[in-house]
Length: 603
Image (cartoon, rainbow, N blue to C red; front, top):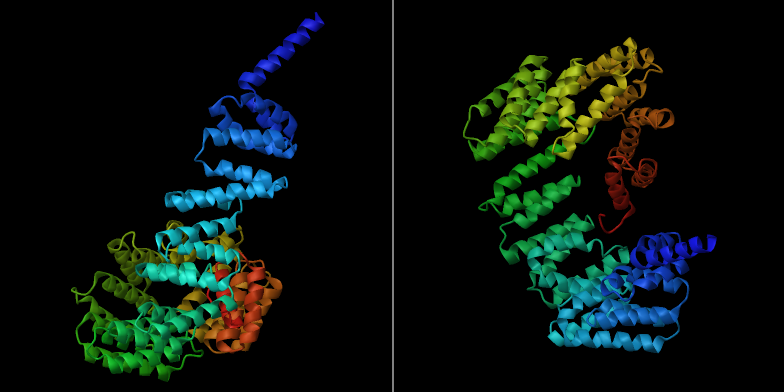
């Protein structure tokens, strides 16, 4: 009886292996029991469909158990069933290579190369299969053969540049990249950004620059080379040379100064204010009859304004000079869009820096009466007027205007910005629950900056209202009042209040935020050493708290921008990258570190 049962079990297992044993074979495969898996897979090789299904795993099993003969038979069977499929031929070549049959492997590769040479349509699919197997040199040969047979030196330029990059053949890589650009000049802006994944070292960048200079001298009428030289100088932050190159491009392509204008804007965005102003001055002098002229005039004064506002402490006399500049701009442009934009800028200076809020209110209301102006511009002016009412301690007027803009600009960045300002108003006035309701909506805003600002303020409120502790709520209320004082530029009152809060709320959850606000205030008043001491306190005692990364980044900024110690600033940015890898400031810290270190490119 036992013998009968045993025989039945054997027959059952055999039948299962024949008809439905693939799950068991796969289980053996996953467990690394390749011999057992191979013995089952072998039973399915007669069915072409099943063979295709098990082929890859069965071949792995045979390779693992070193059954060369069976592996060879398996591959040849697939080649016979699929004579045009390159991947099986490559499997056979790899098998021969791995078993010291290099001559046999070479014969197969040579046949593949020949087939592609005769039929260019096979190139892409064949190279894809070759790449998976690591046949980089063969891929290069096939591409070059295709280029030769088609008599087209630009064919497969991008693909060849990738291969030369892998081979560390910088000269050929650069030559191919230039071919790509020459072939796709309409997409050159996209390609420039893509090239930063190819040109990744100072040596490669220098060679690229040298080659472009050489080619521009050989073919001065090829605009592409001039354009690339401009791009190279912008990458190096060499705005003077970029300016020279942009002037040449403007004249060659009759661009009416707009290429130079782009360089001026980029220089300004990179805080190279002096160079930026020189560039805009040139445009104002040389292009009086071009449409770039009003833009250059406006950009020149706005750059000057950014320079003054980012030089601490801010000097009132410089603000008054800016006001006169904007007055002159309005006199020149009159009642135009550009003219009223200069009026808006003048109003904001009156309100926030010269304590002339009534004058600012009058100017903005006058703009709002000009209903023919751009809708977005009018909404922006209405938000500005709301800000000024907040400066005047008239929060009800402010919230009314913010709400109007939010309604008029529903689901737009301006609408979200207005809602954020309304949330901050509620926060300043101690209405934390109302503020939180606004912020909960804004966390899903389409613009990253607004969503981040909303998230930061929301977390701050939660962090300081989450405990059932009256002192914590009181501390947040006092803190938000100080932030309103800072918004209103009442620095002396804010500092007095902060000094008392440091003593009053020692060991409170809000203590690190008080130090951070003090640092911000000291920076604005030009007391950089005092600001640094406060930031160092956060570094030493509150590094893992909510403002740990903000404080570390501000510390590096002060050292770089205000104290002009680039070596120390580079070290601080590098330390920041290590200490705060997930911070929203990490990308900017990395960019500044590499720039201060002297890297050629922005990554």
